[in-house]
Amino acid sequence: MYPDLEGRRAIVTGAAGGIGAGVARAFAAQRIALALWDVQHEPLEALAAELRTAGATVASEVVDVADSAAVAAAAAAAERALGGIDLLVNVAGGNAGTRPALVQDIPGEDWDRVVGANLSSAFHCIRACSDPMRRAGGGAVVNVASLASITMSLHFGASYTAAKAGLLGLTRHAAMDLSRDGIRVNAVLPGPVITEVMRLHASKSTLIDSIPKQVPLGRWVEVDDVANAILFLCSRASSACTGTHLIVDCGLHIGCPSPPDVYFAQRPSGSA
Image (cartoon, rainbow, N blue to C red; front, top):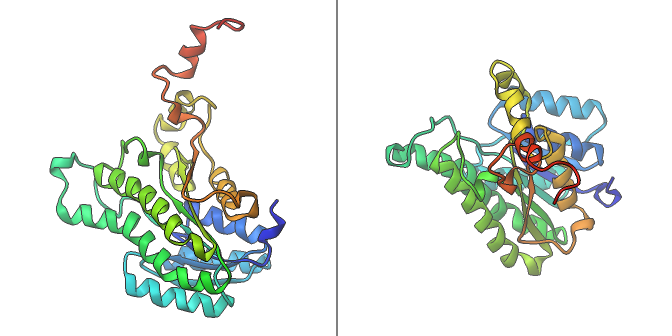
């Protein structure tokens, strides 16, 4: 799809499952050499073995990206293993094991964990990879934010919303600061993504059927949809894009107050 990506070298955080694993597979298909990071050892090694069997060059390491020292050491190891770093995709995040709560009820330690996992982690990774990417002649960073960055999170609470909104600010500022080193920094904002874990849980409730009824395109966002957006932002096809974000949500952000079926029922075909 993007021939210019062949032979590039990428770090993908949060790579053991979901969007991160999807990005790793999409990158491997483009013959990008990979350094995969996650805190989950077994699924990380299973993915690394899968990709190596398919012919990919893969280094894998258990890394807590909320730990700045661990990130710095892992970035140096990745540069040695791959011979350089051209691309960084910050996927790691989530609710960090916390429970959703009203803003007035969020424990301070839960706030710190979620902000650390979603925002500080990206800062640590960008800072640690900036020199290796400069030495490689430039590159691209993609931060995986969320539709909650510009709306709010119904499931993870204010700490997640604030962290993902902050990630957009970091994206813009890092894009400016790294521009003279030839490093572009952008973000993707996924909407409701049907990962393997989400598919398992949603199938036990009405959620699997309810989401498609709420979005204009009538379906969940697939992991591959997000991975394809990230491939674009890493490729020369997006060479004029930096400091911006790409929404991948099947149109949910449009904000129509009526479900699509109701909206179109009120507007017969051919009417304005």
